[in-house]
Length: 109
Length: 302
Image (cartoon, rainbow over all chains, first blue to last red; front, side):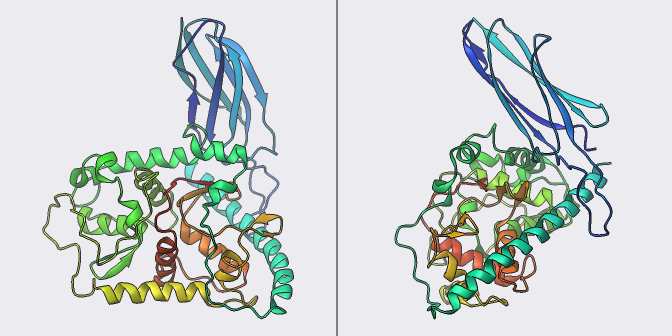
């Protein structure tokens, strides 16, 4: 597993209260599905990001379970409502339950 | 752990490649059957209006290319930025020690390659490795290695939006930032008009030469059939405007040479080795053919 993960989290720096904002997270990850074989016929071990969770000031606002059909370097994008100034955090969990996270600040006026 | 993962990815990549070749061979056999009946002329008939493959991307892929926060090649670009500042080798020098800040120093550099450097035709990757071994006293990066691709993307991205203009001997010399040694960068003897033109001609000849068991030349698909479909995929005009690219099929970043080798494997030819002079000459011809088009590094392709 190639943790620590490389993550890019994109959140608008500022927004008005009640405004719909777009949140994006891009991870650099092989997403090996565990179904393929290498040149020697050995199964390439599964290496997947299984869960991605977004927290807005500690409150969960988005969660997705990822499976074998997701391509390498997955991108997750969703909309939420800017309620208060604070921190958006994305947490990625891998097959073995290890996690990596990154945060970004947003100012709400 | 990192190395193991990298190894797995490499093997995974090989497997994808093999599967792709099997599919494309099937497709090409069909195509060759059609083409062989038509007695094609191998002379390059360039497409009417030049068109970057960017214009034919789906809306989502286009958005990926245009927005750094969506483009996975951003990871490689950021790696390249870190490498730009890293002091390495006997000289304990970073790229920045000689060249300064990349946005200024490297603007308009990538569009000039491949170009003649000390009597040798080098692509951007070749120049990066030349700098590493000659100026930094460090080991050369391996072909298609992540650090080399990262550097090429980082340097290429500084010229994003500038017109492609491979350096010609007749062009005015672009001032080189102060270098620690006064080694001449250009060998005037070989860096002549005729030597450059003959390399360009070799590149053009390679582009129009039939190769492989399917006996196809680049020109058959990318000039004469550009815009048509091969196995459901649009055949592009083969203007290398965005290399190194992030290719969705590869799930990774790759160089123009990797793409060229891909096509050669597709027509069942023995591909030239990475770094082979033939591949660089072909690159030169393609870049000259795309002269004036905007550089889009790092582009995203399906």
